[in-house]
Structure formats: C-alpha cells, structure tokens
Image 1 (cartoon, rainbow, N blue to C red):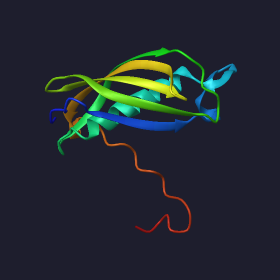
Image 2: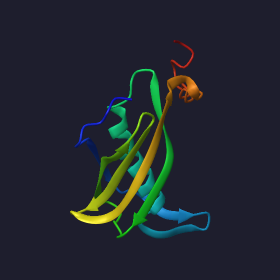
Image 3: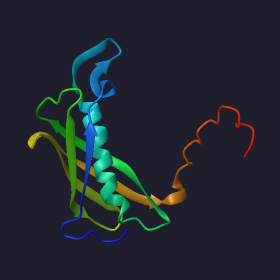
Length: 137
C-alpha cells in the first residue's frame, strides 16, 4: 500500500431510500436513515480512500467499524460522507468518517481496513445471465 498524503480523503453522497431505513424482522422501526445503512456508507467512503492507495496485487478488507449515530436523516434526503486518513501503517488504514445532512453532523465513526494479497479471498460471484443472449458468450 502506498503512503497516504497528509490530507488524503474521499467523499460520497447518498440519497436515503426506503431500503436504508431502520428495519428488522418485525418490520420498519423508523422511516429515517438506519444505523446499519450509515455504517455501510461509512465503510464505503473509507474504501474510496483506500482504493487510491492499493497496489495492483493488493485488496482491502474491513476489520473494524465504530459508529455513533447522532441525528435522523429522512428518506429522500442526501447525506454526505467524508472519510479522512487518521492512521496508517504497512498493512492497515484507519479513517475517521463523518456523515452530514445539510451541513449538520448526523454521524461519526472510524473504519479500519487491512490490506491483503488480492487473491486471498474467493472472487465475488459473477452475475447470472438472463434473457435472449444468456447462452452466448
């Protein structure tokens, strides 16, 4: 992994949808940005920082996420996630992440990623081909 510059950061904008609301097996709890969705988006923002630092033979995996959810964000609203490098060593990148809605802090967290060899894990499944041309390559 290459060394991050002092101001290494990445941002990601996400519009809250019904799929992001707080819900469990018993149904929807609140029609606002759920903590699980916020954690997912924090991890993605931190991954955007890591992608610029990886060598071709490297891949990053999530190792730890800490999140503090501070304010609700309604469905249809946009949340901006900003990840910035907080710590780095040879195989580990730690990012501080903020989630903001209309400039107000809606959540904050810390994401730790570890760098491994790209072939360390099985590749993701290929999408299933459907339709007329499914049998042709």
